[in-house]
Image (cartoon, rainbow, N blue to C red; front, top):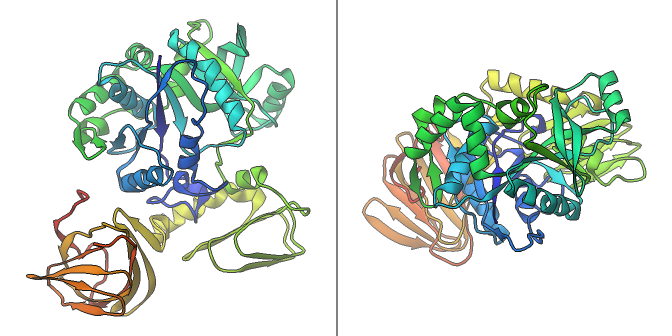
Length: 480
């Protein structure tokens, strides 16, 4: 048996604003520990008891916008990936999994897929690995295995799984998937001991998933097959055909396959569930981060530079600046460079309404942070005013910006640390620490870091228009 991890990296995490943005969603954030949620998901596979099975490098399925961020985060933890499938648009989890299964089978193998969302927190990783070990032989034998989270409260925000006939080693057949309940029904589910939360983690053989898609949703399968057949690949990035995938119906794994196979009176006995009691959270809102966090004597969870006076049962996160609170109860405070959220912890779901209003107003705070990551490094817009903008730019060793030109602005570059190789028109020259150069409006130019240390510089832009869309690219190593 070969095991192929599939990491589902989609979703924008709007309920985790202002830390989560469209170009830097929650799965790329360090919210619950040393590692980002994506890194923690990949590392969770370390030490998996495979009983002779082989573990392939993970395939990541995500958005074009943050492909280099995903690759960089895996590089930081020393993990090679088995390819990145870049969805041209969001179509929910069933098409994403179908593309992943097609890629996993492209070389002629038929692995067991370990399908994991990249934005879950699992604190007891040993329990998770034990549950995977139970699921693998069931999936290899043809079962579609899901993990059921052992409930700790009558939660109304999750779907539930009703447990059926035992299969051994704690696993059971799924009797039925049920929708999110009201409070009284959820309490009944908890009291009965027969229900688990539907956590969205699956272990399924690739050929089995594709066969069940052909049975339950042949329209989705057909669209994905056309999109995959028309794929293009550059570096490690696999891009399905955009038009074919855009025509694919959007559907979740549960609605497309799991629920039809377990519908009352039509249950095929193919879907199994393994209980998972591993201190799991999908971190769907800031309140979830408070619930799983390490609390002080007053019930607070703090991260960053926080000074609290007479504050209790609150979550306060700061990205850099000091945040001081006085006389607060049950609040969430999240500070970033360009936005601050202050909310009642019991009404935190309404953060999505804030994001909706920002989008309607065309505000940039929904899309990206002040610090913007690029494949060559990052930049931070530290000041701006009429006809000028100041950026701090860091280029990683070997990083190369595109050969480009601007119609509306000139740029002054001052090197703070490292050495820059600058192309300006027909010239190419080095600029060292405490030296500077000037790029006139309309001049073709490029910035590179030829050294072994990060290049840090200050860029002062001046002109009538300073938007990022005033870039004409002639060459770009990263295919943008």
